[in-house]
Length: 87
Image (cartoon, rainbow, N blue to C red; front, side, top):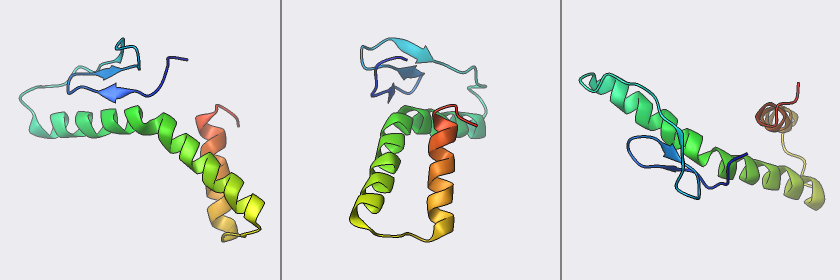
């Protein structure tokens, strides 16, 4: 795994060491394509922090005895499993 945090520099995604880890070919004349690429790239760059935050929320909810709505916890745990490559 490349070191996080990842950063979107407008052209691609770089790891914490500045190495390019992701780039997509887009039609630079298609505004919608450029916008979608930017949105997906920013989400990808934020993914490690989002996963860590979700794990923290689940851990804190369990430790404090707060019982979120069951469907929320199920969705959170499913998202964590998916991000970690579990079935």
